[in-house]
Length: 283
Image (tube, rainbow, N blue to C red; front, side, top):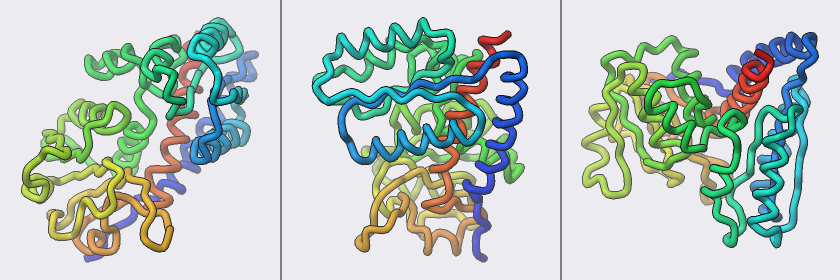
């Protein structure tokens, strides 16, 4: 049995078409959804991510502003800039690209963003909203994973979901989103003594640790859904995930590829969150 692919590129195209239509409807009412992207320093990966985010906005009817600053920018100057963006009615979403230079406290910067404009979903208010089921912004990567499960009409009720990874950006919010859909959730991490014992029980596995081949075929129950959030390079320098794709696809029922799986969905959900922020502001 070879697993069916959950195609993040195809799903992204569908969702972005919906975003463009909703953005056009807002524009007709005199509101153009606006995203400010703040980049501090010259991190090459960050520059690529930022470029992709800006292009996605432009391609789908959103207004975007890129603010680039040298690595020497002080924390106080960055916080002052965020204050100004918080007060700017043309900006509905603010994204500060991580990582930041070491002299800047990333958490302090995230908390400076108005929760109404926290389209990355990293603010403590957004985390609290997710935890309690209140309206707020969901972090884009796990939100994208949930959309992928939705796209295959997968009913999570009563299913056992194992999340590998406990980061604030993916692992923890992913677990809460699965829980909200009535899955039974296990979170595994570097101190889990026998990862395979957990994953072999799972109907759904989300791998999000940034480590190659953390999940192999012998660790997967036949027919399970496997979502690979990892972004690594193999020995040949090619992009790969956390999952041994070639092995696991012969056991799983559904699997996401890397590249072309969760990656495009992350940017798509950023557009969705920005649009949602603009719609709330317009109302």
